[in-house]
Length: 523
Image (tube, rainbow, N blue to C red):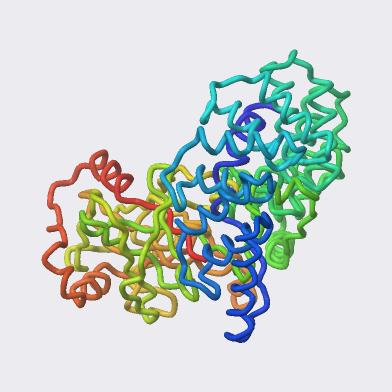
């Protein structure tokens, strides 16, 4: 439990709030729905806390009533003031995110405390996190440890691994590797993928337990099968060196390939190095095993769901993508597939969530235009002219926010081809590494101009079925010329678009792209 454990404690909460799969409710006929809303209102007026909360849920999702987050927030507050734990939790989450009200960490901590004092493990986790990060309360590791312990003792896996990290670092509690190991194991046994990987590191590095490579490999395997890239890399090392498992280059190749597909540092280099001692048939088998791999999720009780608000009735899947501003007054571009089918759109700006409106979309080129209120720093969109094969480009986006967090990530590469899959002229092929969540990000040149929009990566399994080999970092972006034409078709927009820059300045271009990048949430 080293640096990865420290990062773990910091990012358990931040990214996951905004990217979760929520359930779908049953659609009611209009008359039945109206009658149900009336019953909720009457019960709420008579002091029924659950009815008050449920009414807030209806306003939050616009089901049977106009969508109105301010009214939803007022309903949640009334229910919370009546002591309804779910409302206290939801109210805290909305204060934390700035939904329906200005972002206020102090209020969030206040309401999480009220729910935590009623024994709610979810609230106990979040109150501990507030103390750990100093959000809304003074930073106090001892308080964080106390609240995480309460939730951990209720079986909350996220609190168990967080408490383990405090023991590992000696923050708020005595430094104690054995205690860190104990709580990590409890979380791992519940199926928490991060705890499983850290537990493997404990056995490998003798952290709180006797070194045992076989047990290390066992826990790496469980985390790797759940899709953890670091565990996949570590398991590849085990097979490569015969540590805890029989030496097997085919298995090593498979796990290094899977880790590489998620951008895990060093995976490509190690995988390619072992091919020098492998027969061609062994390489092909390693590719085949990687191509048929399917993630197998374990469920860790409250641990895996702890950091998301409870599902709202009727809400569907929440999708996260990247966008970028094209005007200073809040017009932004993302991919059409990010917003497809969404009933609610928002953007994460400086840690707060603001509502977004869909202005226009084009499924043919997979581009959508949204609008948020405020003043921002926009990027110029450049037509295709002057762009050539081999030009250096980069993107800044929000890949895999559940795992990697919600801070913007920069990746660089080149224009690999002037056409997309099957020579589609609408797209560039690019060598810029991208992951789920990068969709909609700006592809930027060294002058700070948008030359395309990141849209897709070549599917590993489909490519293997056709060619017998896994693709190596093959990604696509719709060309800037098409994006510019799309934007010019919006009358109020054409006069606001920025003029492309001509001076190359790599550092300034990166800074400008970071300022313009935004996390887009569709649900």
